[in-house]
Image 1: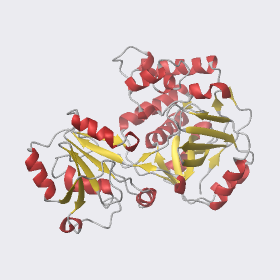
Image 2: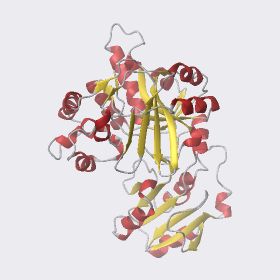
Image 3: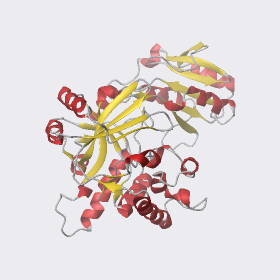
Image 4: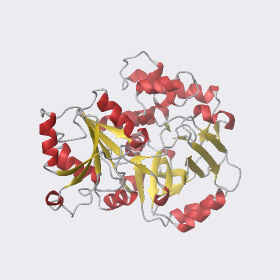
Length: 412
């Protein structure tokens, strides 16, 4: 089952939502966040990345930074001012990017179900990032980042969502990146709640650290509450659940900074020993799974695994046959020495929204020695790995378009 809960959102007035809504805190670094938010005192980045309002070089995990988050949140609530809905309800959130549209349910979901793996995961989390967002939630008493969930399509839910998005939206604006964000209140939330109660499983698509932090914050607040009942708002986390057939995944490319003490000729010989190479590959990347494009020495090459190498791959683990895994196991690790892409500082990842021109730029400017363009991982691959209790390789999926923070805030 999938338990969902209406909530009383704290939110900006309609005429200011575009100013408040910000990109997720974890898709920008401090410098990028400072540049975006500097001309806009209402940007929610002042809450989610409060170090941007402090001297450069400040420890972003210091007590002062979390105190600044609380100060900035209170200032936004007062000066915007933020409003709170009178009654708890569910919301519907539509993202439109070009020809692509997806509509999901914005609600609160059960921390208990997350802890019991009824909300399935596919990614390992880093303790430092968990620590950061857990403290941010506890200090602000708000979940300022939204988790991105998916589920296998259900026609009844599709029909309800279609019917409930016929009315006038609560918000409708286009952000500076061209993505349109449209939000409705759900006029008949009880029907959606009944249908979701029959959804066999939810899956985290994006936001593993946000979900893990909500769980840890709940544990902290529960232990501090001698009158804990289980009905408190901290037992739930804010998320948007989209049907899997509406999701759009872009590839996550790789760049490696050096050739691991090889000359260019030695590197190419090693690659040819494992892959078939073709010249003049499409610079926009491969057009199907099982193919990789490599940018090296000013040229694009097409790569496919040699048959004798492909025949040795394990088939009992769904993660081993993913393109990201095949590239890692057959080139990045044995040839370039990138044993652990989670920790190796020689590898960087480029989300597909930036395009393969970013790969060319990094190599041409000498910031990387070689780049690899991948075909996107499918949503079915993600669900299969999650159902098997597996862990996806790092940086396997880039979901686009992305939700905005600060539109509907869940306070605890």
